Length: 131
Image (cartoon, rainbow, N blue to C red):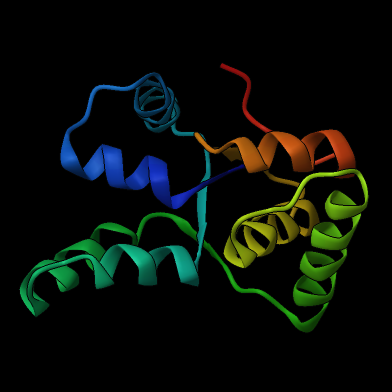
């Protein structure tokens, strides 16, 4: 299963032709299980200009696996942040730490375009999709 970060979804929905979007398209064509966490969906929906577009985005996520963070996910996210900071990497988004924690707890790979995930891979063993 692959948990796809919001930056990839934004590019995908905007029709941007990036290497990460090409990987997402390949995963979808191969019928790989694709996952998201609720905060990713929130980020996408809050970027919409109206409720109609937000409902369309929400509906398009129905086929995907929704991973719901648990209390353990938040504890792990905080530990990921602290462990990375101890190694000299300050993760810029708490949401990214939560995405990583949910992926680790669910044994998922993360598809991303964000250098912070590379740091979490190095420090915490996060599994990421290799380009």
